[in-house]
Length: 135
Image 1 (tube, rainbow, N blue to C red):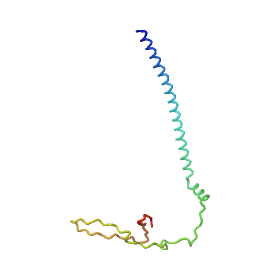
Image 2 (cartoon, helix red, strand yellow):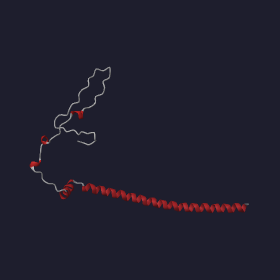
Image 3 (cartoon, rainbow, N blue to C red):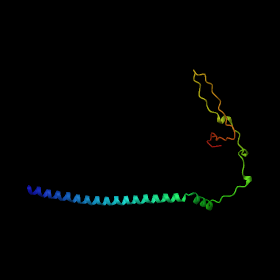
Image 4 (cartoon, one colour):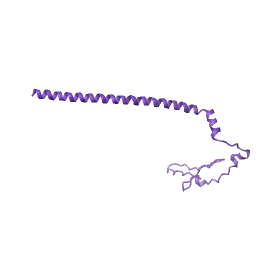
C-alpha cells in the first residue's frame, strides 16, 4: 500500500512538475510577445508624432500658397465679370410658402394671432417643393 502511494505521489509530482515547466515557458513566450507589442506601440506613437510634425510643417501658409500656385492655376477676374448683389435676378417670393401655422387660441385667453412677417431686402430663402427638391 505504501509502495502504491509512493509511486502515485511520484507520478503526480512528475506530472505537476512537467505542467509547471510548460506553464513557465508559455508565460515567458507571452512576456516576449507583450514586450514586442509594447515596442511596436512605442514605434507607432513615435511615427505618429513625426507625421503630425511633418503635417504641421507642410501646412504652413507659404508652402500652401506655393502649392496652390503650382497646382491651381487661377485666372484673373476681368472688371466686367464683377456684379453687385442688386444685379442678381431673384425669383418672386410666394407668401404662401412662408406662412407659419399659428397655434389655436386657448379659450380663456384674449390673444390675437399675428401674421408672419415677410423677409425684406435682398434676402433669398430656400424653399422646398412637394417633390422634395430645393428651389
